[in-house]
Image (spheres, rainbow, N blue to C red):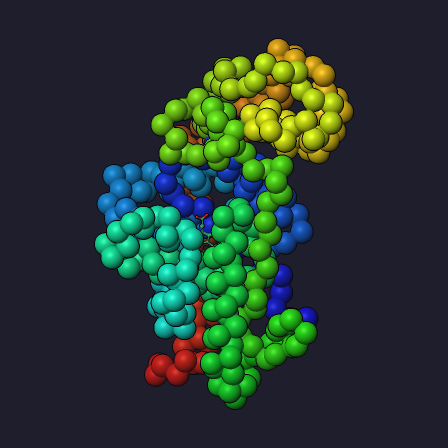
Length: 355
Ligand code: TRP
């Protein structure tokens, strides 16, 4: 066991509005982890310029994600909330990790392949190196647990690979300087500097699909606003979108098996389950055999009950820009102190001349 103390880190990009999928898959989990762990939640603005360099409203988007964090119940006094670019140690460690990681590792990342598309030569170097910065975000705090969606699993594996290679390549310096900790690597315990971070991946119940097409993920970039419930939607909008959600003409099945070839029905059942803190089985036990004309109004009521207070709070907080900015400044200072403590040691390990 590592004696590095448990610490949760996660990041959300300031691009587009957050929706129900982000809320159930990420934010609610962030909130719950506050009870058991120290947590650092970061608006990763440096990441957002990798795919598109110029943003009209980067600062506004950063504030809006911060407001969503706060409205969901993240406590910025007990934990840390800040935007990445305020703490330049992230970029500094990312540079060192660029020299630890191999180009082949980056080329294999499915997110890079998807985002770069056919014309890879023309993708930004930042898009290729994105996972290296993500590893730095996590490891500059030596964070041990990272709540993320399934799509980020590969990046977390790469973070572990980078930590392991750094620990290995600098093993003798880590030893000489006496800055190592016992790090569990499979069967073995090695003396290392960076922990091998564990992903905390969302369960399938929280994978929220589009309300217009149950085979596609709910997405902020879907052209149809009816496909998603935004965290800024008020009660009327939430109820309307559920009423208009695509379904099939059959009643809900009384067994889970009956949801298999019915992605839209499965999605609505999953959303109900996640909002009510039930399993899909329990929802089916309650609503099996019922028509959507019964289930949809029940789901709409539940969604409005759970989400309307969050969206109201989000609108309230968003209006208080000075407060949001103060949260980020304060969080940035505290994060910066922690990051600098790590970087002092990293600079020594690598052997840069300082002082
Ligand atoms: N890549 C993550 C995403 O797109 C965002 C992110 C950046 C992140 N740095 C991180 C998530 C560190 C967790 C930890 O969702």
